[in-house]
Amino acid sequence: MEMTIIISIATFILGGLLTWLSIHFLFKSKYDSMLREAEKESEVIKKNKLLEVKEKFLHLKADLEKQVSARNSKIQSIEAKLKQKELSINQRHEDLQRKNSEINVVKENLNVQLELVEKKKQELDKLHQKEVEQLEVLSGLSADEAKERLFESLKEEAKSQAASYISEIVEESKMTANKEAKKIVIQSIQRVATETAIENSITVFHIESDEIKGRIIGREGRNIRALEAATGIEIVVDDTPEAIVLSGFDPVRREVARLALHQLVQDGRIHPARIEEVVAKVRKQVEEEVVETGKRTTIDLGIHGLHPELIRLIGKMKYRSSYGQNLLQHARETANLCAVMASELGLNPKKAKRAGLLHDIGKVPDDEPELPHAILGMKLCEKYKEKPDICNAVGAHHDEVEMQSLLAPIVQVCDAISGARPGARREIVEAYIKRLNDLEQLALSYPGVVKTYAIQAGRELRVIVGADKIDDKDTENLSNEIAKKIQDEMTYPGQVKITVIRETRAVSYAK
Picture 1 (spheres, rainbow, N blue to C red):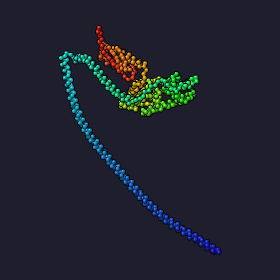
Picture 2 (cartoon, helix red, strand yellow; picture 1 turned 180 degrees about the vertical axis):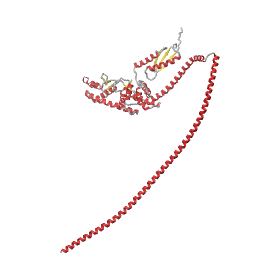
Picture 3 (cartoon, rainbow, N blue to C red; picture 1 turned 90 degrees about the horizontal axis):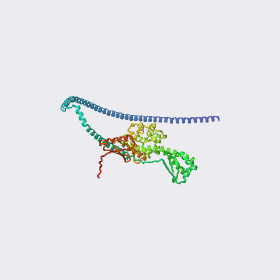
Picture 4 (cartoon, rainbow, N blue to C red; picture 1 turned 120 degrees about the vertical axis):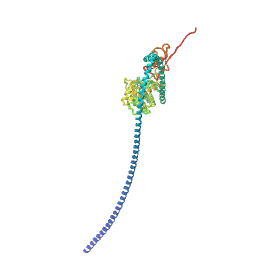
């Protein structure tokens, strides 16, 4: 029994060993075959990589050869150009040497000719001296005496001829200058067109019915007093049907009062607390509108880089007026005229337009300094870093500082064109009559003047002189003197024509 067990166990062990050996040999053969296949594949990959590297090397070599050949061709072309330039320079050098030799020959010839001329001049001087001596002997007068007599005889004739010649030159220059100036001014005016705005010191606020007047006045006048205190505008509520008058010299405050009244009437709640709230809100809206107006104006005119404070002051011009002419429209018109005139004269139109827009900036300051508006505008422009020629043009447009560039007279002329345009400004009747009287009295102050008449709204002055006191020659001088005195002592728009009239009348009576 035990032997049987031992034999079965040995048989089992031998079977396991045989199985293990068979499996071992099987895996070993597979491993060897896989190893051989891997070695074959690595050899193939190695050969492929070597072929790829060789191909890349050949491509790079071909590219480098192309680049080298291109650079060599460029170098050859540059060398050819340099050789050609060297040949041309050598040719020019030879030409210059030849011209210099020719110039030297010409100089030598000129020196010889100058020597001959000098000799002939000396001979002529001697002959002239001999002739003068012979003339003195024949006439019995010395050369100085003869010159003095000739001078005296021709003096009066020379005076009259010189006066007529000067008059002709002056008239011709006036015609030419007036023609060119009128051409430029007319072109400038034709190319610029702006609307004319006339403002007063009052604003009329229309209401739907007179019942609202009582609500605006309030109990014991509390509402109207609160409104006047908040806006700084006098509110006149009288018997005028469906209208309330807002009176004040500050157009910005009048606009704030008008808008505040409009909102209060629409809302219906009118009491002191509500009035203060609405006025503060409207004042903020007006300030925003001022800034927006300034920005829109600069964008419309194509002006960039202005300081924000200058833009705000430009917007304030919308609510200001000068002699009834809206200040912002006047500034825009002047700016466009300046640009046109600068273009016609060959100057920088952008600078001229900038100076024209800013020329009256001193009329809308936040405070009220005791300075002329031109000087104040110049200081504001300097404060906000404008260029010196712009600042000078602003300050010199009323001759309060010296003009330092051509922009200044252009701004001055265009400001006068905009202000003197028919219908642009209103003139007080008293000032108008005074100006006419001053013109007549100024001409009457000259001796020989009998009567004077200022006609055509002060644009022409006719002067009647006595025929026995002034002759025809002196009338031209008198007109020039009167014109110069008017130009120096008076301020007027446009120009004044002075006409001096001299006539002789013979009066007799048949009885």
